[in-house]
Amino acid sequence: MQIITRAWLLLLGLSAASTLVSFGVTLQRPATIPFLGGIVILLLAWAKARIIASRYLELAQAPAYLRGFSLILALFMIALLTLYMAAAPVTG
Image (tube, rainbow, N blue to C red; front, side):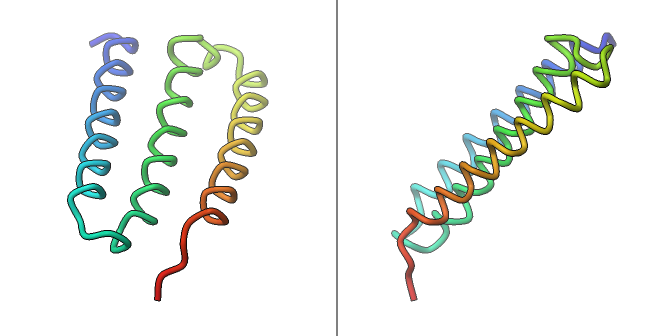
């Protein structure tokens, strides 16, 4: 199986996982797991972005560029997670 086909199948799996998590969050009673669900969905989005950058944009063939892109992407995702956690309602 070609690398691009495996990447596509992995993207399909990660998208399905994001969908399942979002359905699980919306089907639960309010304020039980939405906070963790949002974090999981953001982490799955990060994984999908890495796959797209390394396989579809072929940055895997240029490791220095892939490291730079990964660093910028990681900093962006940390900022998103920080904002998400700051905006999430605290339940007790």
